[in-house]
Structure formats: C-alpha cells, structure tokens
Length: 207
Image (cartoon, rainbow, N blue to C red):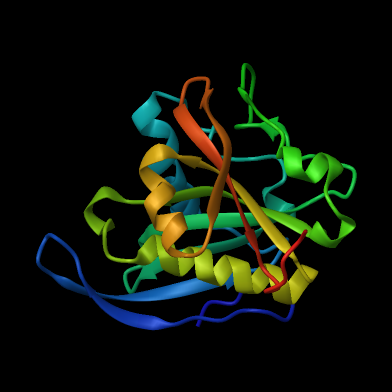
C-alpha cells in the first residue's frame, strides 16, 4: 500500500486488460493535502493534459497542488496511468483561477451559482487536472478517480457541492457519475471548448 498524507490512504486493486492485450494490476491511491507526489504522477499529468497542447514541461504543476487531494491509478511497475485532483474552494472565492502555472495562463471563469448561492453549497470543492494515458482510456479509470475524489473531499472537508470545468469529450463520463452541466459553452484559451458542471455531494437539494 502507498500512503500519502497524514492519517489517510486507501487503495483498491483491480485486474485491467488494456488495449495492448496485456494484463496489469492497478492500484488506486488517494493522498491528502501535503502528500508527496512522485515524478511519475506529474509525468502522467503532463503527457495527458499539457504535452498534446504544446505546453512546456512545468505547466502541469499548479501552485496549490500541496493544498489539494490527489488520486491516481498506478501499475505494479510504478507507472502512473491516470490522475486527478480536488481542492477546497475558499469561502470568498467564486472558483475563477488560472488554468496552469506560469505566464500567459488562461483564466477559467467563475462558477456563477457560487456567487449568490445558498451558504449550504459550502464547503465547495473543485475537480481539476483529470487525465488518463491513451492506452488506458475507456476502461472506467476516470470514473474511479471521480468517485474516490468525491469521497475523500466529503471525508476530509465535509464537502457539500462539487464543481468542475469539463472538456467536451469528458462530459459523458462526468454525467455518468451524476454531474450536471450548467450555463453556456465557453472556450479556455489554448485548450478548447468547455462546460461548467456541478454535483450535490450530500444528497440534499437546494431550492
């Protein structure tokens, strides 16, 4: 078992057959804020999310990574094949932020329901930096990450609502886990079209 973060970790081991035809044992790992993130974790994030768009190495690292909860799938050989993270949205924040570290980063828009929303929406959390290596896609790994991140955010922060900005291709996966689109489609500079999505994490509804 890999342990990350004080007093918290869990894992599940699955046999997954990837499209190359081999079978690997995967471990789902979740680490609390201030966990030690490996080079393999960041290599996966870069390969999935930044390299295909022509971003330089370093753009995969975010200034607040140390404050976030992270989850990843790792092979028994130590390769990280899928990653994701979730962070607490500050009570005085509407969720708008730079898309990546470094200069000229696009600013992702606010989650407008949080601006005038019921205080019962907070603590609010946001999922970011979800990515799966090409050869491991369409095997349910992303859904597993989402479920794990939601559970960790509820346990650690008492999260009541979740928020994210989804690339168009990822929307069906999020919808399968109960996330709902809102607002209009918008473009994140250098990345492409997105929709904002949200989910009630406590099972309660807001009028």
